[in-house]
Length: 497
Image (cartoon, rainbow, N blue to C red; front, side, top):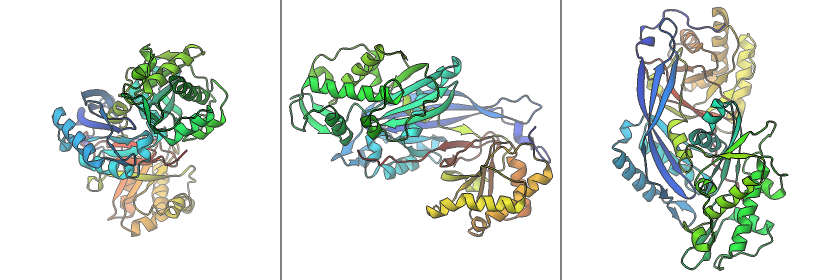
């Protein structure tokens, strides 16, 4: 049994039956940039006599942009001016203004995430398109977002199985593993369709990315910028990248090349994969059955993506795993960003809209809590020490595990221990931000405020966070009963092959 509510029940908790919020997803990838606008319905799904339980009950994409080539300057920088022009134009076509947007995500992925100005661009775009649009990057998060956008997560839930979603773009392949609707593992590999570029007019090689150099060397080939492309060599590197993907999902032994191209930890593989979905720009050529008989057909987009997709399909056809076509291919990540990144908190929360929204707040997780004020304070100080070592001195949140049933006295002990442990935060006049698994946010927030007046307190509940996570908290919705939240890992890939 968990604490549901202490004190007087708020009259407005059940006042809002549902609310519509608009979300934007922007994906700035190695090859393409695109945008979607989604409409999310937040609804009270609890029976009328119970404490409200707000959920996102419907997600509908109401606008899909054109798919644009990502503007890059001198292979080093994202072209800020063209990105903003592109986004502004698509907003006008969609008939929405930045003020109309409530939530969403800007994601910079693949090789683009390595550009010198990648983080600055994502932050600027996020600030431009909405008050609560978060900027994210990093292969592990993109793996999960793409798997939700492609339909892999829903498929695994509806069919009680384990699905590997492999999202392949121009610079990376992001693998997300979903078991019965839950993401259980992920990794990112530095393989993609645009790591080697071709000029379709003269069939010459125009660019070779660092990860492709590793693939070329592994194949014992001699390929240089300016050389006339050889189809057999292009076939060899596409096949080698395809084999690396199969190695990373446990279908072939993991090679030294695969270890080198992994941008994250390898998959744990302590589970059986039942089926595979492939999304991303390369995916259309996995499922089309289209032949690539000439360099002209291969280089239709100025890269080797079409042949990469074809060789991957051929290798899967010879293996034991079945391929299922996803509901979305090239738009999987952007739809995941626009409609599947945001969640809502529990409805027994304590928030102050004056300090919201909060973005990119690092989380310090307390793994175990002993019911003693001094021990709680000591545990908090130990948990936040690493944040101070890394000079994260601004806002941060405490993540508290499910502590089982707590009576009123135990909640008072917890509140007092938190105040003691966060004494330095309170003296700096920073808000006290607590993220709870169990639904005691309101009573804990009220207790903290009663003990220590004149401080800003945010207690959100029914959320699970892990060490290394960041959280975004939006202004309250649904009559003030819940807040939109995004829990993420905020990492810009910088690994160079």
